[in-house]
Length: 169
Length: 146
Image 1: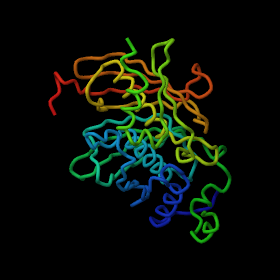
Image 2 (image 1 turned 120 degrees about the vertical axis):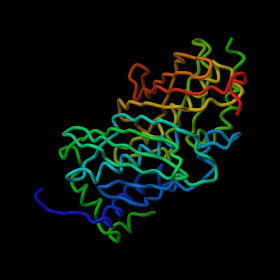
Image 3 (image 1 turned 90 degrees about the horizontal axis):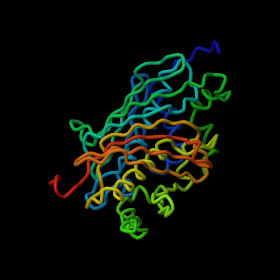
Image 4 (image 1 turned 30 degrees about the vertical axis):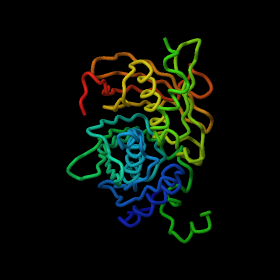
């Protein structure tokens, strides 16, 4: 418990990439982790037609953006904690400023705003063109605490890549 | 009467929503209750946590948004898919990797905006895994030129 380990930005990038790869839905959709650390997390979701919510008008499904915000906000929780804990989503609100359009990658960014003893408060933003935000998300996550976090969770998160190689299919 | 919105209509609309097909969403008309019952398949690709295992919370939200959209089409008879304005979802229980169901209540259908409440459950409709409320802009031909 007293082990002092301050992850570098590379450590966080690797840890969050590992987390995204362990989530079947985001792995299948090809979510890329662009940046990760205590200041925030940024994802990139490459375009694919499966993301459409209205194929007649060429609009992205609002739920795909909600899914991305839930994931990116959840990823922003980890670097905000003293040590990694399992934190499920308590609730999530998404405001859709304008529709996301087909054919373009979707960028999502999130940061932890505040950390209390039981909850982590986060906010996120989605865009395709930086100056034109598509959606905002506000997500709160429950801290299950170290007692409900599997032993070795942090170690597995920050393990060097070669240890994991055998686990890929 | 609900016979206007039959099974064929639902699948026609679903075909225009590729992400809903990707997630494995279907809808059936409950003739007794004259309402739509929505179903989400527990595909491996819908999993968010492999340890529990549990469905991705974002996938559950997308399922509920799709349910609300289609339920609104049934009630409002609009020519285009309603566009989401906002969503608020509360996660009440872990979504296990079994079929998930949803039912909606359109609480208000105004001239331009609608409010829909959605409840999602797995084994028992009295024990929801998530509840959500959503606002939509209705694409009514009379008040919507785009």
